[in-house]
Image (tube, rainbow, N blue to C red; front, side, top):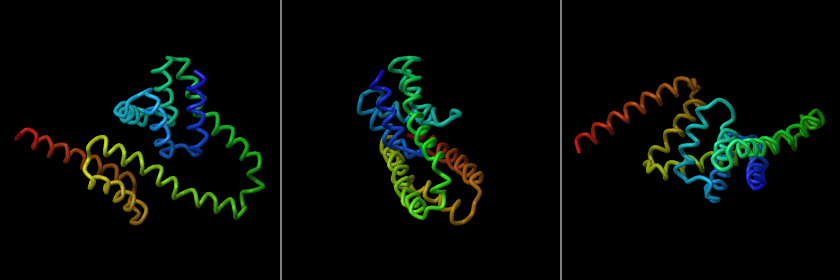
Length: 179
């Protein structure tokens, strides 16, 4: 149980800000330790992302439950949440003193590219695991560009992705039927 807590506390500690930046570390830790397989991680990520709440906490709960049932789920969730909570609490106590500090602003701006890289790694890993073609990786790049550069609403991008996914599935289904 202590190993579960420490593993997810390390994940929580080194991935402040949560979100997709946590994915590579979660994946590496839980798959390397043999707690779940690579395929289970991909499935688990899909399920955890569709549930309400922070998906990293959802993943930690699933992994903990698989290993030690309810106590494991609780320990893993606590390990994931506690470091960020304590750091945010500490920052909140001193935020008014550093909010307008130019160095602090530069640090946060410098972190942004690293977060983008941390998000890109699991996308590429998942694409390879699923056997997706390289051109498919252009889809999120195009979608992000349309939102940030062209000002498209994310709602329209999601709707277009749904239609594109349905069309792709239909085309692939037709090719499979012919063979």
